[in-house]
Amino acid sequence: MSAHAEENKFHLFVQIAMVLAVITGLEIVTVYMPFVSWLLVTALVVMSAVKFLFVIFIFMHLKWDKKFCTVLFFIGLILGGGTMWGLLKIFSAAASFPLSSQ
Amino acid sequence: MSTHAHAAAIDPHDDPTTTTGIPNKKLIMWTFLASDCMFFGCLISTHLIYRLHPAPGALVAKNVFSIELTSFSTFILLMSSLMMALAVDAIQKGNLKSMRGALATTIFFGLIFLGCQVYEFSHFVSEKHMTITNSMLGTTFFTLTGTHGLHVLIGVIWLTSMLIYSYTGRLTEKNAIDVEMMGLYWHFVDIVWIVIFTAVYLLEYVS
Image 1 (cartoon, rainbow over the protein chains, first blue to last red):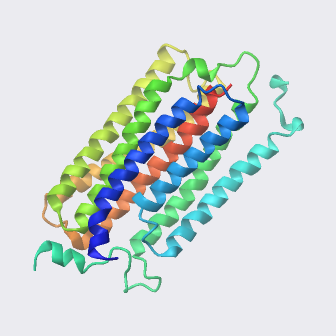
Image 2: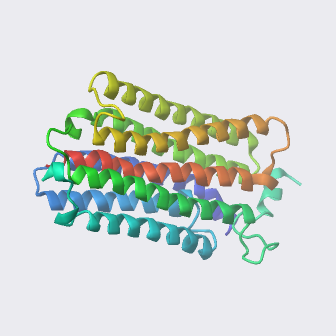
Image 3: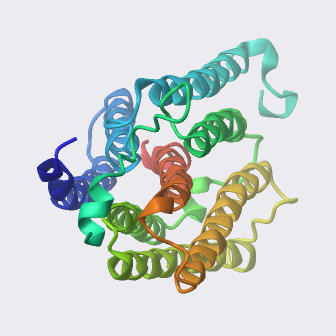
């Protein structure tokens, strides 16, 4: 990476932080919008994912690091996310509902 | 040679002494963070499962949570991430003074976040009568956010230790990797909170 690019990191970090703050503000406004639930949930998930990706690729330097770091982290992320998805699917089945909530 | 010129000779993204080209400390930290993803994935899904199937008469999370306080905490943690990134950038350029300032600010923001969490927990227990044992919401909420808070506390202790160590004169741009490892951990705490803020707090307000 060039020295010029290193110098510009300071400005990049500040700009990213401002973007993150604005997205957080938008998230809070979104929950009070009079739209259908699925649209609001999708919007929140997308905004959360954008914030997540900005932090890992810029603040955590994945953008500049060796690709193997990204692969390593995404293995954990996919396993963790897959476990979440699997558990939520299993416990969405009617037979898994707690008796007290039926 | 000036410290800036010296720093330019060290590439923080390439270590020719290892077979992967990645410093071993960085590799172990990314492996740990990947495993922590699975840990928090399980805690978050446990909370969501019980929220999807609440028992009759269960506490309504929307009536318990305070979106204003949580939004403030989220903003503070995001700004602490910025300061941490600036601290790593400063030490990589050999600017110890700037790194100390950025580290101190990160610690300050981390303490504010912890203070907000302590206030939130005590408010939930004393005013909303939600404890870790009297409701499923309380059990999953306190376990999840408490575990995250513990991570923040460990981060604050690590940051403070590094700040003190920087005054011994042994912390230079040559061991910027140590500050970078700490930064990775701190940013991870931030990304976990980004997910918790949406999954645990904001989704409760979507009717």
